[in-house]
Image 1: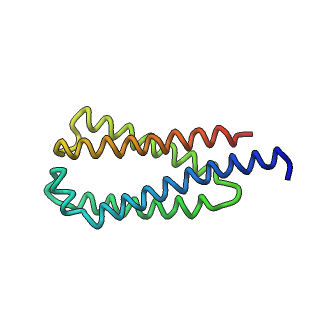
Image 2 (image 1 turned 30 degrees about the vertical axis):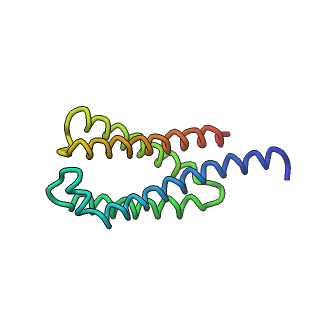
Length: 136
């Protein structure tokens, strides 16, 4: 294998790994939300756990799709672009929601939203960087 081929493989792997890690985080978060919807809703100040259950189900499906398509060879740049854009939108809506009080949650809920947004921002940055590295 040539040096150029090795570098392209490493770049493609970074993109793939960033998508797989994002998918795994989504699945894990979704399972936590589904399994602990009632106590989590109480902790963050939601009257009903339905929103957390729905979000959990969506995250699980999204995570499975991410991991499935991340395995394609070469790594799917279009999927990575969509994932990065969705992650940026998640972060922007989280920040706006916290600033403008869109979420009727407790202080613990605001911290949870902020911490998740920080993790999602990390994945967005990683995916954009991986896309930049694989461009040609």
